[in-house]
Amino acid sequence: MKTLLTASPSESTEGWRGIRPICGTPSAAAGDATSDRVPTAAIRHALRALASETGPLAGLRGVKLLRPLVAQSHEVLRERLEAGGSVEAYLRGRTRLADSAVVGLLHIASVSTRMRGGNMVAPLAAVAVGGYGRSELAPGSDLDLLFLLPESNQSRAGAVEAATETCIKAVVAGLWDLGFVLDHAARSSRECLDLARDEPAVLASLLNRRFLWGGFGLFAALDIDLAGLFSGPHAARWRRAVGSALTGIRDDALGVAQTLDNEPDVKQGPGGLRDLQRAHSVNAIASGRPAALAEPELIEAHRFLWLVRCHLHLLVGRAEDRLRSALQPDVARRLGFDEPRRTTEAPRLLHIFRRHAHNVLQAAALATHSVPDQFR
Image (tube, rainbow, N blue to C red; front, side, top):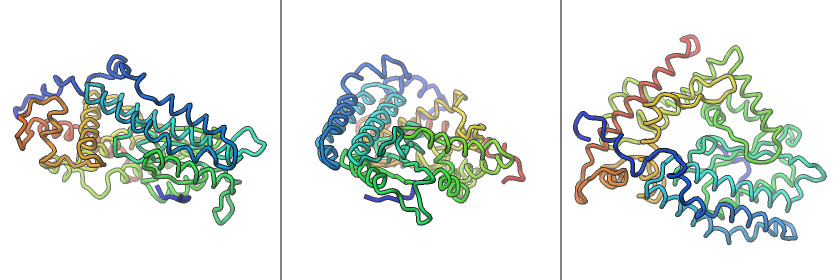
């Protein structure tokens, strides 16, 4: 998003099904056993307390003091994943933490800047989009955040009212102070639609939108506009645009061969998470949202790929999506494979990855080809 306001080696496939210590199932026992140790509520209450500070943006000056609490939350979530919690609970936990920070900072900034004026409804809506909108935040993921503005709040030059601009800048700075990496934009619904028509990647990101805070009417207007694209006479064209954004220039037939790569990219590579997103986003439903995953093999692939990606990020300490040979044994051990400590190979890990990648790539190709030829 453009920033407008800156401030097993055998043929058996049973190996993965037997691995429970990490993937588990998304149950209360696995996901909530240590929920009281995650100080998300403490962060939320502390941010609300800061909002009571007097003076322009006074409360925001204390935001940095909460960074240790955010770091503690991330650490608790990491320990839970590595102790056997489900990856779904891990991703949801990271999303809830980010939501608390975004909403809390918006509360402080809106009070401090008096952005609302005498109105009950804020002239702004915060919307999670992309991976953040899907509630899928890996350790190295950015927060894709859209600040949605009313049409009347912008002039022909695109200027934003001073109080609203100050509020957005303060929230962006606060999120960075708390340790989040942010990718944000400030646009009206009309600007979103105009840009989405020209840039399929923006359209694909908007499919995964989730309201966070502010004027819900602004979010509802965007919802209606996007639903109009995917329920109108040119719906297939926009579905195809989403498919092209998620495919890039790679050919699916070539992708099948590339799934044999010994160092696959679990996000952008053939059969990776981007192709999985394409498999259930291309045929967006009339509301302009992706249909939920329903096929068991794709649900299993989703869980496996996210496990691998999260553990890669945790091992390297940054966003790393290529499953390099040097990292494969450590990732395999984290997923419950009994790999010798000094081994330099993880054949079972690659075997299972390729099985999932093959299934994902087939599903993605099938979804893309279901769009009528005249709209390709």
